[in-house]
Amino acid sequence: MKNLSTSEAQGVSTSLNAQPDATSSSASTRQTLDPVALFQGYDSFMSTPRAQALTGTSGSSGVSGQLSYMVCTSIEQISNALNISASVSASCGFGSMDAKSDFLNKLDVTNTSVHVVVYASAVTSAIEYLGAALSITPPDTASEFFMVYGDSFVSALNRGGEYYAVYSFQSSSIDEQTTVTAELAANGIGAEGSISTGLQVSLNNAYSSITTAKSFVQNMSGSTTTYPDISEVVAFALGFASTVTPDGVVTLSYSTSSYLRVPGFPSTLTDDFLKIDTNVESFVNTPGNPGWSGLYANTYALANSVAAVQEIYSTYAYTGDTALTQNGQLVQADLQTLTTLFNSLEYNPTQTVTVPTLNSSGWQAPTLNISLGTTALSAGNGDQTYTDVSTNNVYLKTTISCLSLMGDEVLDSIAITYATGNATTTVFHGGGGGSGPSVLNMSEGDRITGITTLYGNVINQITFTTTGSSTTFTWPPNPRGCDYAGSWTEAGSTRLLGFSGSCGDYVDRMNVIAVTFSPATFGPA
Image: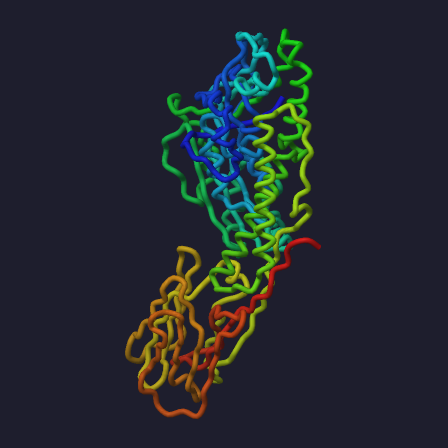
């Protein structure tokens, strides 16, 4: 018996789904049915309902609601935590499945990311079949039967409401992933467990202290109540059952069983249906047996890992890693190979399958190779030292979006706005005097490619060269005389990341912190 599940319908088709070729002549025999019903047919390869071929009797299964959390490092684990169908087409399950699968895909799961899933469900009805019999005249062949009625039928069905929230941490390597899970454990968040009030404090502390790129998302069905704040997730989950309304319930989970379990199933179809069952068992992703769909999920996560590195490269206009591009194309080719295999099963389910060897078999997630270097632009020594950025900011894709300068004869102050995603942080260095501000707003994609300074004990004047329409930006315009000059120029695969230095009433010292890229470690050993 296969355990699967669903969530609220929104009609979303996502990239995990291996859809059949719409031009196939068999497509006209397909039906998309909703809502889910006991005894309804089911296609395991597409995770979609088919026409009903059975009638029978049913009774209560005694299934109750769930309150749990799980620390996940794979699509398989997240699918289990969210009660999503284990097949590769988890993005296209029964009726209301699409919303939950779309939610999963938006998490951007990679081979190195960590996700803490908080899950609450309230079951309002739980039934299972007690006996079944064919209610139709079966087609002549197993393949024809499969085309209309699928390979199995819904044998248990749970309905109600559910709430799920995910704290995501985008680690950059396996080592960093291990560090994140260790920090979660240090905050009292083990691999999995039941939900209690103390969990919220642990989640708050971990989310605050872990410095990788992170995000928080949540969703629910069966309730119209307002979503909680990130700091109130656990309390909301504990009280979620009381908010579920009868008219809002959805299918939470279901189980399927092979037609071969039905008494009186035609013996003329049995041999070929055994072949179908063999392929289904090889296909479906179950604990301890990833199956072909699990292989797809792992390859999909690998493709996400490649995309994450490529996004960093794009942020800093680094184009020197052609091997990552080429190997990433091989990963995409592997996804297409598996999709082709799954589509062939859809239209020839009794075939004996030879799983192709994948280009990316055994590959680990790409490891970004970067180093930070510092270049002094001046030599003063202010009372207050600062370091705006670190290696972690590269993984966060931090860029400079605005500079605001004050000064007359010297540079009194500089305010630097760093952008990370949709969030910005402005840091201020220097005193409160001087004329201005003189402001340089950076357009998206622009970057600073050169900096020159004139300085003595403090910086008298600074000039920025950019890739934007305003190629140079200087302040103050009429500095006092000085004896020294400093400079930094972008070269090769080195890009400006941010600044360090010291200040007091003026900007005494500035250092460029630059990141140098080398090709990522990725691909065949």
